[in-house]
Amino acid sequence: MPQVGQPDDSGPLSQIPGMTYVTPINRPKPAVPLLAVFALLVVVILLGVGVIGYLALRRTTTTTSSPPNVSTMFTAAITKALSTGKVERHLGYSGFDYTLQEDASQITDVRLSGTATRTATNGSASVELYGSLQNTYIKYDSATTTLAPASALNNWLVVRRSGVTPAGVTGRVSQMTTPEYLLLGAYIFGNFSQQQRSTLVDYLSNHPVYQFDANSVQQAVLNNKPVLVYSVSFNADNLSAYNKLVAGMYGMSDANLQALLGTFKYYGTNKVYIDEASKQIVQVEFVINNLQVTQTFAKFDDLTLPAEPTSARIFTQYNPLPSL
Image (tube, rainbow, N blue to C red; front, side, top):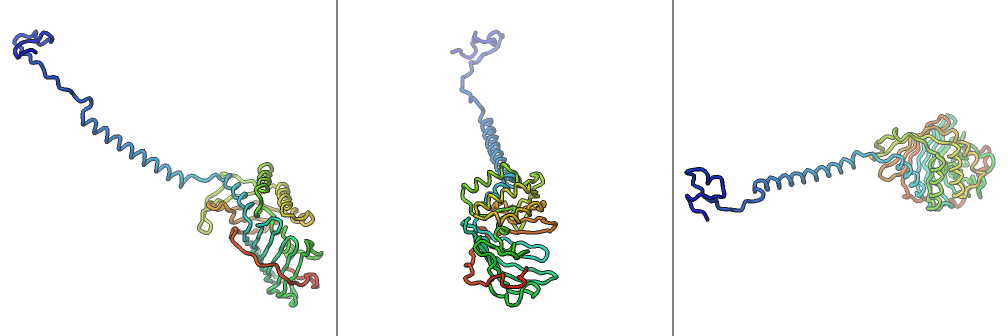
């Protein structure tokens, strides 16, 4: 080892006169300064926090602002209705109002029960209704004599018997005591089997019944619940064929369908409200024969119907026939 004052031939300093060369002590140096390591650690921590925050924000934003697929939602609502055995529908329009409870938990043994009121210049009435595909009944709780004689009040009157509605029963009494009118239409409810639902949905996929502009669907709040609002028009021929399929599954006779199927051509554009959470159709506003109608749906699979009346008078024994 070189001594102090003795140049080392290995370095250029040994060539400078008067220069004293001291051989340095070789100490190991850290590969990365500690300060740099600490700084890098801080950066990594900050980046990690930032990434986590970004992902959380992105997840929250996607949940709250991304609109649902409106076409998928509409199909889901139609399909959901086809597996809903019980529903209460309320319908109201100029001077007429009814609430109808439907039990289609057994498709071939449908039951109906409800109430209706009629107020018009020619009189008023309040009635109760009950029916199946075989027998239908009406009871006048109150009525002016222009609509029903006093002797008909507070008695169940059988209108349809063994699937046959007698001649002369017309107007709203016919419609309100005809299951075909009450169960069929633009939007069908019932506890159809998986195979039946598949058949109906396949038909709708291949023969468009409902038409709407997805870009015009709006989000709104109805009864404190978020809903999607669709403006829907119909293909009358396809809607008629769709109802024939449904009627066959219900076990309805073609003879009782003709009058109803002829009304579809009068259906105008309607607004459909679909609950985003339950995927159920909860309200429909439509025009038929230039008449504005509002129909609501509730109590999905959550109602119990009364028993069929055990005794009733014959509706056609009255002359003139009661009306509504």
